[in-house]
Length: 184
Figure 1 (cartoon, rainbow, N blue to C red):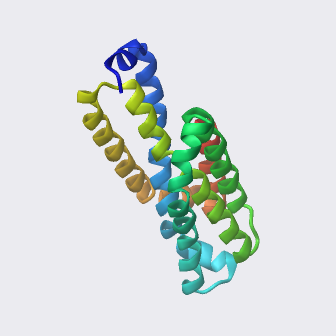
Figure 2: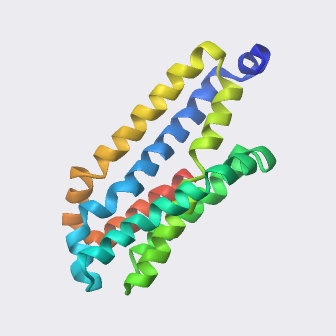
């Protein structure tokens, strides 16, 4: 990275973009952990066993891990903005779909699509930060990004349980999907 590239970026704009990307990373962790919070409701509604519900939760992680290499390649070819927008929109639509499914098979498909979608946020965000922040700012910004992700893990606990109490697990996933679409 050249210092001129980081300093050529308007300071306010890079902070707005960083805050938006950090909120997106909060949603990555939120999506990752939210099935555990509403597991009993999902299990009863989808009429499935705990083991199969565990598979539903795991259906997020495998696509997420698989997409880490393509996320770098797409970030370099499409650019970070298009990569994040397209795949985060996919995650939002998939979360809404998850809130509407009637079978475990469709729920697993929705979780796979959520995993694919949110997998494309971290690597492109790091590319943006590399281009827009000076070398001596990069470590601090990465730490802030990680901390915000941790807040997403927190938000997927009691706040999601509260939302689920109000509108049910299905309504919660629809709202989460809509928020994800807005961020995309």
